[in-house]
Amino acid sequence: MRTIKALKADVLFQLKQGFYIVYIVLILIYMLIISQLPSDASKIAIPLIIFGDPSIVGFFFIGGIVMLEKIQGVLQYIVVTPLRIREYLLSKIISLSILGEIAGIIIGATTYRESINWLLLMVGILISSVFFTLLGFLTVTRSDSVNEYFIDMIPYMFIGILPCFSLIDFPYNWLFNIFPSVLGLRLIFGAFYGISAANVSFFIISGIITNILLFNYTENVFENRIVYGGESK
Amino acid sequence: MISTTSLKADFKMMIREPLLILFMFIPIFIFVVFKLLIVFFVPVLYNMTGFNLENYYGYVLSASLLFTPNMLGAVVAFLMIDERDAKIYELMSVTPLGSVGYICNRLVIPFILSIIYTFIGYYILNIFYIPTFTLALISILLGIDSIIIGLLLFTVADDKVKGLTYAKGFGVFTILALIDLLKLPWASFLGALLPFYWVTRLVNDSSNIILVLKSVVIHGLWLFIIINFCRKSNTNSK
Image 1 (cartoon, rainbow over the protein chains, first blue to last red):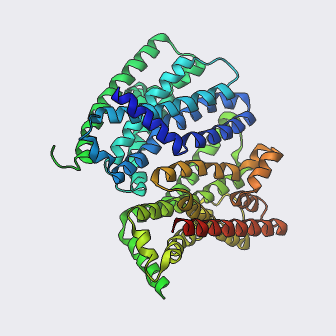
Image 2: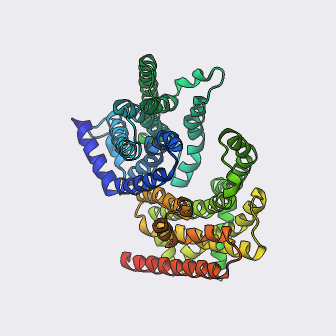
Image 3: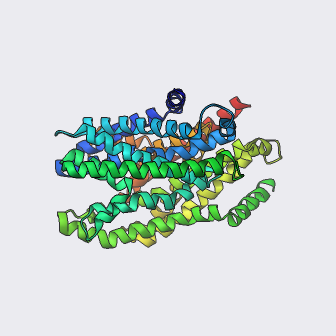
């Protein structure tokens, strides 16, 4: 119940901050560009755009959100409210994933002419979105300003994005399937091009397990560094 | 005098601040990445698909040159937003420097660096010929673009989150700068309303004097509008 209330507040905050308006503009631009591409090129471009923008949206925005709440003193008060850190993180992750899901679905629905496995697309976006928002949380624990956040993002971005090149066939590329970003991208491509049931099950289970482990780690780091400012509880 | 002293202090701060130094070197890194992609990726792309990117080198050069003012403008805007949150901006407005002097000093840095990086980027990439006079003009226009981005972001963003939202939205500017590629007259008309579009036009058609004049007028108009918008918003917030 507390998480739902926090989620409602986060979605409203994002609406007020203009996140959804920006995405309406971006979706229109994507529609315009994709409509001018040859159909072969657009078939590759659409999944890449959905992965490259809506799935990663949390990584970009979470730094500013947390820093603003830090300045406003919201984070320090969390410890004296019934809302737990776990619920706080969950609410932020879900709200940013909702934004990513809506943007991804609209881009797919308005630009792709053939059939899409919508459920798979949504799961793919969700796994990537959760992963990148968690990376954003880990990044912001080290940053004191937005510019610092941008610089601190770079190594985490490498961790998230570089393994995605393993979609190009090369020996032992399956080793990179431990990264939720790779799993999410494979599922998103699977939603457009088809994918075996065995692979879907493996990718979803691996994605969930890795994200849960990362969530627990992020919760500890966030609580220690941000809420308690590095001091022991 | 006050302004010069403050500007010197700003440069000293930049030199001492590793984070800002890093940002100042990122454009060079981007140019090198573009160059490596051109050297290694373009032949591969041609062999695989028959698509020759060489026909679009003017647009590639324009996109890479536009990266610097966009990035430096945003970095300085976020620096000012952070300083506004930390009440430094308020403090500056009651010093002899004043809020206008403070903003001017901050924006001189991306302006000068954008000019320098235009030349560096042009010579690192070395893919498209532009006469020296036009290149010098483009560098100044890109410097103005950095001021437009920095001032616009600082003025419209009330806080860091709004700053990030607008920064994301400003990504559209670069796309609109390359909009001629879509060959849609109405989209080109839309792009032509923005100063960034004219940089791409100048890169691709550097000897057209009418184009030079149009580019200068559009940049001047935007600068005038943004400065007035910032002044008004400053007056309203007092």
